[in-house]
Length: 272
Image (cartoon, rainbow, N blue to C red; front, side, top):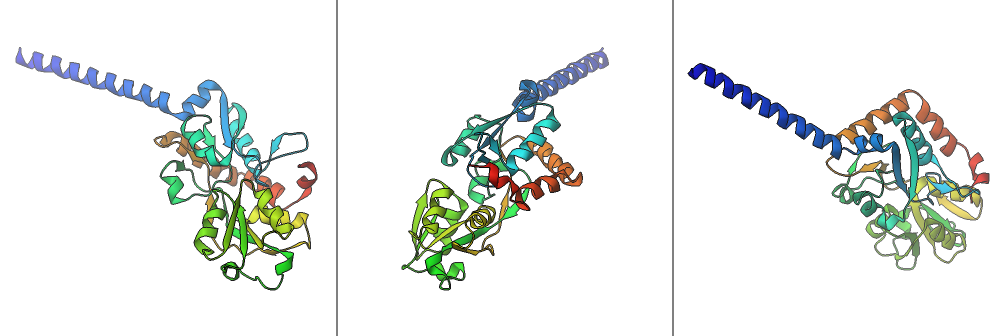
């Protein structure tokens, strides 16, 4: 009788444990962003259209760029619709955390400060800060170290790693921070500031568009891996993103997308 009772109790415990595991699994699936995307049949990507060549508007008003092409392939791999959510940079992480979109894919540099708020997938590209020097300073400014002087005014974009790098490496220079990278670069182009500090891809393209009108110090003085950001506590989504990136590179698709936006300037004629 005692053996029978013990067996019965064991069965109850096993069934209860199985039910608990199943319930936990269901809750985990509900919490997973990946599951939500598949159920919704829509992938929402957060970005700020204005960072060439990662995301910008063409003459038709469409958002295009390197990140957009990557996001398009991502949605195709999931078999869902892609929706781009254009968001101001200073509020882009809060927007991710409050579920305004599923994934932040906007040329964001991985920093320890940002990593406290969000999780990053494996980096998909590495860039660094470079300098566009006003033509009036040609021959005087040959590296970022030369700019670390109170007589110089340096422009950058507010809240970006260019802004952080300017504060860190050029503490003695005057700093003007602008809402957009175009504003800061234009100030340097017009000679209203002495230099503009920003990511290599943007500066390289801006210099190409204004050939001979500025001096481009193209050797990056910082190391900055860019990666997709997701909300914390979602290992399923991170796992999928990392495997997707490996597959994209292994299939040669990443190389094609990279070549389109970084090894050619044919697209410049189509953007605003």
